[in-house]
Amino acid sequence: MTSTRHDGDDWDLASSVGATATMAAMARAIATRTDRARIDDPFAEPLVQAVGIDLLTRLATGELPPDDLVERVAIDGAKVRTRFYDEFFVEATNAGITQVVILASGLDSRAYRLSWPTGTVVYEVDQPQVIAFKTRTLAELGAAPTADRRVAAVDLRDDWPTALRTAGFDPARPTAWSAEGLLGYLPPAAQDRLLDTVTELSAPGSRLATESRPNPRPGDEDRTKRGLDSISERWRAHGFDTDMARLRYLGERNEAATYLADRGWSLTVITTRDLFAADDLPPLDNDDLRMSDLRYVSARVGRVPLVRTGSSTNSVV
Ligand code: SAM
Image (cartoon, rainbow, N blue to C red; front, side):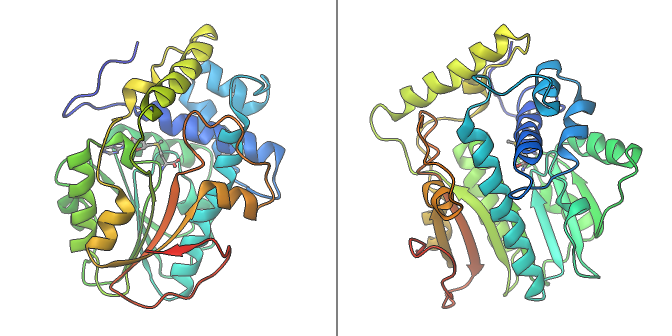
């Protein structure tokens, strides 16, 4: 059974918050197998297999159909989310940024599967056991990084900037940052600190991609918790003992988009609902997890005029 979150808790890829990285990779594996035109992450399936959570392996490999075990919106969500961050990095590096930091890299394989321009350095930051497992497993699979990949194995509630600098990070150079699927697993104050630190370490020209969830309206939290409990129950019935609702920090927090805008970032924001529509995916039906309102944020340091691209529903904060 999942224990309650606390300061200084840690994990591997089969336990606590670490298992959410395996769940995210499982969704990418299913999406890759069933819709390769929209997403192609060839490392997702073998990474999930290597972690060895039986239920997630059987789902990732297709031995067990997702049916009522993985919501369709989670699989389609993985498609739009992966594309959003892939495109963010392609645009940032095409614009000349050569320093990339992937915060909470989990089982993300971008450092191995994107075509990074020559000279790009990709830093991955996550808990030590997560970093060590992915590095070792991909090496065993014969995969080689497509950039100069460096790692900072550290807790993001601790002094991660020192670990990042030790790995070679240069705050004087523009950076493309991502914090994908991370913020809800940080306590509210740690989220603020993380965004403050990213802001401090961002030289002019830097960019950041992340997600921002609107604060809950009355009743929303109960609905989210019911949705998470329902997933946990179905998974428990298949032998995977997790308690999704206890892994996240639910409740009020500063909304990342507003917080970043207040600190001088210029943002382009698009909701999951609009990303689904832009990709001709069926609308979100069961939205207990409030995915449709989740906002994908692409930010640039400073109050620079932004060129609007893509959906006309993009808004600039
Ligand atoms: N970004 C990856 C992706 O989208 O596939 C992983 C997302 S997974 C939902 C959450 C990740 O956040 C895990 O890899 C976990 O280890 C990492 N994480 C959460 N809190 C962390 C912390 N305090 N320090 C380091 N990593 C953390």
